[in-house]
Length: 103
Image 1 (cartoon, one colour):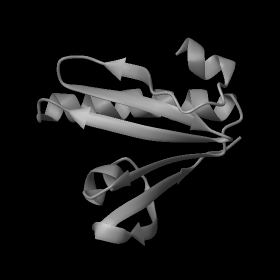
Image 2: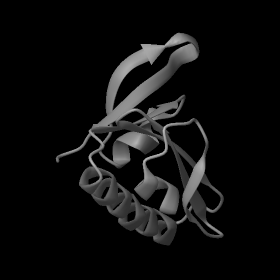
Image 3: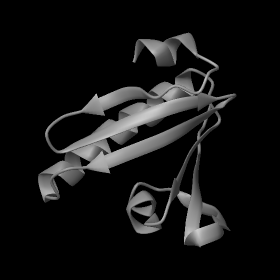
């Protein structure tokens, strides 16, 4: 998380959270966090842990002045479980999902 605090302006992936069930990574682009996630073990406890970690990420990002978080996914239902909204549909039926952050 140190890199998030430094507000790096380059496109490098940083790990916010990782365990045996899932990981959340991010890249910084201007005032937007670009999110990447991968789930290794689908189970209810993983989802609950994911909600907690995602809430922490949103809180930290907002405190640091980020205005949005975004991801591109062919499976938007997962992102929408976490409150994301479809911004647009890209080629190959990939959706751009956005989370507006409160400052």
